Length: 300
Image (cartoon, rainbow, N blue to C red; front, side, top):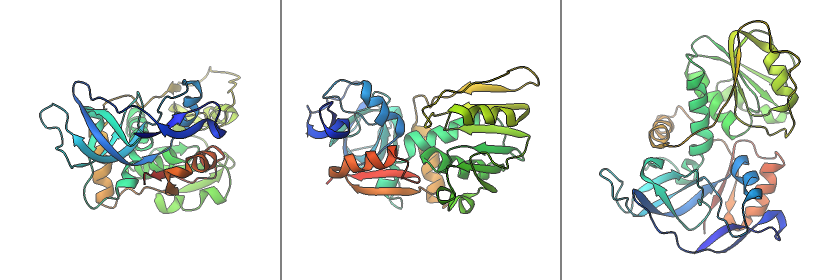
């Protein structure tokens, strides 16, 4: 089958080539992939993988061979899938039963591919931060995939959402998604902040720490700045900072996000979409921060 392969000799570190057909293991389904989405994590993490490895957490498609588990979606079902072991950037992939969600007919299958890592990360990070009703929630890197979902979900939870972006242009549309404030960097953000979802890291993470009020929490999701954070002092009022990772078993949460999409309460912001033959172009745009929201590649 065809797949996006790690290739240290190729421009950008990837090429589309031939890979062995995947063999489903116990409790796994075989899925014909139709669409895939890109995340900073799987793009940049692929640098540590050997040549020939098939990366990709997130993809959507159609069940070819159901998992041998009661309740597994039958062949022909439209699904969205993810796997921590990756393998999603290929014509076919094997997926654990608890990493599959059925995509309703009224939802674009390509947009569904954007949900697993970005959507579930935003959902679980907000849940882990406690009740949001009436809280002041700061989301850094709000123009990215996780950020777009986090703004909407925090607003649905009753929070006063402050969306931090890198430029005024990247903040366009965030108020329509539920942000009460849109700021460039952290200029003008007033204390106290109750919850921070940080996708940037570096000096901005340290600055967000200084904005926390009593009992505040920061969920450290990403480090798109690729810089270290220096904290001059961790003493004073009670507050905490936590390293966050999405974790496994995404089926139920993906199904919940799909339901919100079907009800018109959650939107996928697509900043780039095209054929997977343009993979290098899409990856360069994402890494260069020229994509607002998510990048989708269609297998053709």
